[in-house]
Image (cartoon, rainbow, N blue to C red; front, side, top):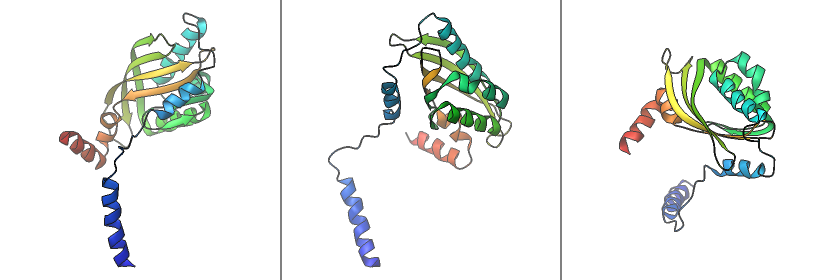
Length: 192
């Protein structure tokens, strides 16, 4: 039996290396599917009170992620059937978003964001450009980790978030500060 395993494993490795069709890893498929899933739903009207409320809600919630703020606003800012991907996790539903932000607040000494710009694109999507300062309890103790990023948001007609996709460097913003993992990510980046 051992002999068969030692023959089959190298053969499987060689055959997988001889693939003629390159493999495609589509990390954007979930986001595209979420956008397609809400395409027929009315968007917030530009210049409306609902638009102002939606933008203020996103800024207010992400501006200070602590337990009290999350409990008071997460399910008001995010639609019940929303989609959120922050590059670390993909969530569906405002209850899941609230639970995730509560866990984030619990793991952190502080998480704050300042917003440099909010822009509405021609197709009704909103880009929030931000700088986030994070102080975690167990990772990089005592250190403020500052990262930049952009959140792409699609609102519903009431100004609640239907789709939220973040773009930021989670390796530099988080993983570089985790023992062993940080060494590995820095080593990989150095070789590239």
